[in-house]
Structure formats: C-alpha cells, structure tokens
Length: 112
Image 1 (cartoon, rainbow, N blue to C red):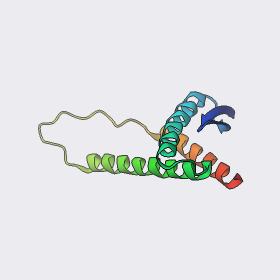
Image 2: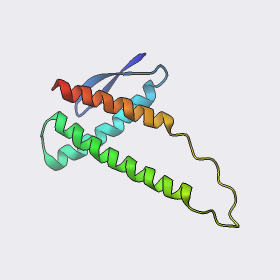
Image 3: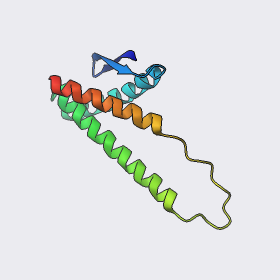
Image 4: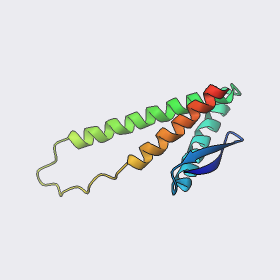
C-alpha cells in the first residue's frame, strides 16, 4: 500500500492508497481542495471538519445526480435508426477512489 501526501485547505494529509493509484488520489484531493476552498470563501472559517463535511455532501450530491442521469440514459429506449453506442466507461476506479477519500475524511473528522 502506498502513502500519498495531499494538501487540502492549506493542510497536508497522508493518505493510504493502492499501489499505482497515487496520481489519481492526488487528482481527487486537488478537486476536493477546490471544493473546500470555494465553500470556505462562501461561509468563512467554520473548521476543517465542517468544511470537509459540506464539500463531501456537495460532491456526493453531484455524484448522485450523475448516476441518475446515467441510469436514465441506460434505460431510455434507443432510437430505431441510431448507431450502436460505445460501451460506457468503467467508473469502478473512480468510485473506489472516492470511497477511499471518504473513509479518510471520516477518520480525520473523528480525530478532531
């Protein structure tokens, strides 16, 4: 198991991840940092735990919306003259990485 140092809201956190997933975790942490900083500019300093919780809820909401859209597309009848669609990309790695980040955030929040 690898360990990656990521910066979120000006603090560095060590995060464990599967070997070979280091760049992906850094990318996810960077996107999470953008979300946390955006919330911090809107609500002010309310503590990292609350900022992380709010950012996580916003990202979870976005993920749920995207899943709903994908489900609608998957269940929609294909037009008769439409060309076959390419297979949907495999999002298992993204979901796994998000779950790992969420678990780490929960551990950080419990430690505070």
